[in-house]
Image 1: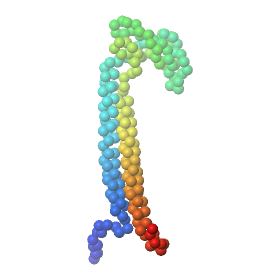
Image 2: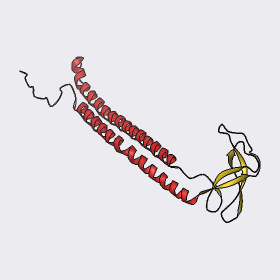
Image 3: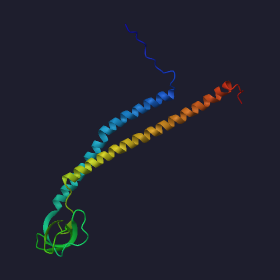
Image 4: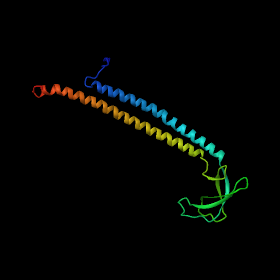
Length: 188
């Protein structure tokens, strides 16, 4: 047969500020768990949705055309083998355009290259892809999680510093009372 001891309400060794610190740190931990479960997801989803809208607008406003190199590729080849060259293309209305763009490193004068143009026939970057939108969403979600963790750590550090300041003030006040009795000196 086991005997049941009633739960003590207060630990006689722990001060009120110690109990307060434990409770507040536990609350901060619960808030951290809730924030980590929601904030990164919401931030990532919002970033993905925004990038998806941009991709849809860009896809509607840009199209690919075949251009021809005006000269051989120029410049130092990057690790990807891409160089720069002037290119010429014709838009849908028969207008001729010229621009300077990245081309494969082995392109020669007259060689065909695919380029992206906007409605006015200017060279533009390719539209944002679904994969780029997804990457932006994931990156934003991870950065939101890091931000939540940093806010938690900052709040916890500030809380503990404030409680420690109060705790040290209490200890100093108690020491002013106890120290004369302990050292056999008279209080001043």
